[in-house]
Image (cartoon, rainbow over all chains, first blue to last red; front, side, top):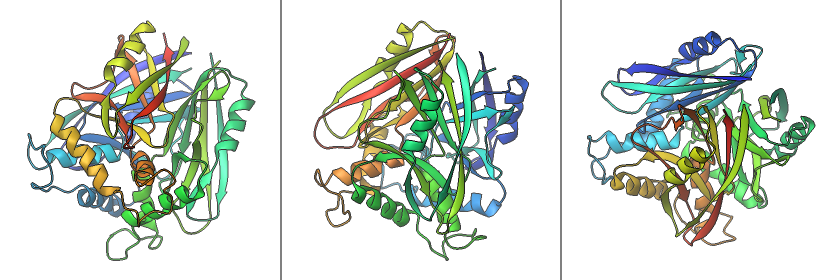
Length: 139
Length: 139
Length: 139
């Protein structure tokens, strides 16, 4: 049994779901393990992780609109706005999703379903440089 | 230290919280480990996992009604409806909960609290065959 | 490779986000591992875990107000109220967040970002004694 640790960096162009499935799968493959447990950890409080539909772009757009609607930008609603009107909604949308995902690896392949993609969910309007910690344990 | 991988299949009769605590505990027990880490991974984007109240059926019904209310069926609200009006709300309800749960195993027993049950949360109206990946590492 | 299991107990004074970052980091440090995977598991259905902003108290207050607003106390809304009007909203707020967090450990340090703190999110009005299960695997 052994472990591998890594870092995945991604420049996000602004709000939305950014597909990172391929980068994650490539890092896992490079570790050369057949069976194990992968953990992705997003080191930010205004971006998060989500596993969702990888086929229909309309589903991604609906997801983005939905989170914009249930945790809206609203200058009158929040006490915290140090970084602008998209600051506090970003924390709320991150809290409603996850900053961590753990996925089993079996026969050298992540246990993702056919229609599942891994997304970095950027909640801030401006481009950001995001860092994910990766950890794999197995053999 | 060793690993075990498995699959749990469940036919869901339609929307709602379906208790899978016993099946999960039985699989874990069959692996014969005393200490370890269990990961459940739901390989779908319109069903999810939730740990919740295992005693009061009214609490489960309230949970189901709540998610139906905050991510409602509404033909005018979503662009994506390839599989009907319950398609996009299913993705939203999955995004608001989790597709992955990781639970420590100690002295041969999952660390679940007295009132915690593990539920497969089906978000589609029609019956579906759902597949969960199971992974246990420990000894 | 080895494992460590532990328990973290916390008396919560009532609703809100309670910072447990230091207790968690101290327990991890005491296990003397350099690389590994930490799992926190909250053994309750009316309290949960959240990683969020550790610097701005206004952000924490906004988070608390937000969850109070989207899963409100409302005697007419829920069938389940065995323990009072804050009973069912507590389950809903726990369901919208997480009862489990898994965080990589690298070079002896949890992979938390600069602005990330670990919070026990108490959803009940009265003080409660909460128990978290801790599990660390690594070396």
